[in-house]
Length: 305
Length: 128
Image: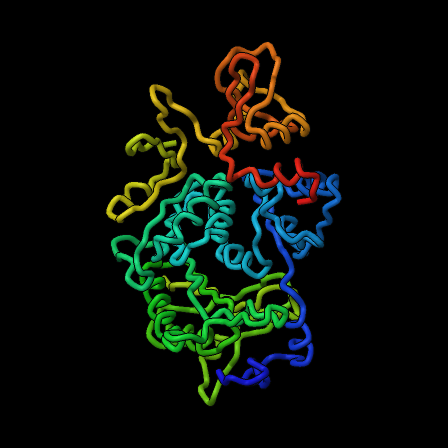
């Protein structure tokens, strides 16, 4: 990543409507919430917040639990937050759990779980049944992870602290979520001057780490299972290249189709003269000028029987 | 549900066939904390009350927003009611919030202070 005035200049060749993208980065990130259906019905929350003159705008056409909290800066101060009925979660961050679509009663691994928004959403989709192993290496993040899960009434989860790329191979899971550490470019908004994404020491090793995590996650998946790989970055070296590496090393891996229900772009076919597997086009990218949310990448991967 | 005791607390997790499969992992936390021991008493946690309080048929104390705001700000208010002294489930608009303690005409909040940001804003008259 070149250190220039436009931090995303290198991506001009593949980000559609680049001028619109640059303009979108001048706006602050919206405040999004997800209604936790384990604790409240979306229409009930809408009605009660409207009574307090708090406006909500729906952000997903097919999901009535996802909203933009217009004009309110801190959802953590809401009664509904205290009761676990709502959770601050970017629209795009709500998509991996929806793409994973775990069935009730399943055995699920969330490899990099903290602070727990996606984990809680997975548990909600499973109706608080089965078992979710919420893994996060950093014990310092377990407090936030545990607090969020408990606040949202999640009772089907255990917390572990393994390095994701070395999670024990004792058991195989029906579903695996690998929402990996990344450079965080998708969170960048120009309003937050001085805020930098992860270009510090060690960030160059991210693709290597992400590749190892994905490889381990795929190994932990049972035959016929589903894995979702996701990042909040635009960097192809952390996205398509990592998924491509898995496809080259595992004949039993296949990219499954995705229909997120909101505007997105297909995964890149190539980057810097490296051509990727053609099925990489089934992965999806989200840009802030197409969807007013955190920039994101997602791949849904199956393990052939 | 399955309950696990560790030191002075009980944790609760939904029973599942997969619990046995996870026995070989080094587990840092299981489910949610449901009860803890305080002196000779076993007290449910705020989160357990929020999860299960709807099922309670006794010991429910319905508050209005004004009472709740005063309780949160002062941690203790005068409360004349026909209920016996002891722990009660605080309810706002039919939603269990947590526990209170009725003691000789006073109601003491048992909701952790750090969890009451919303109410404090309301008491100060500011919008959340």
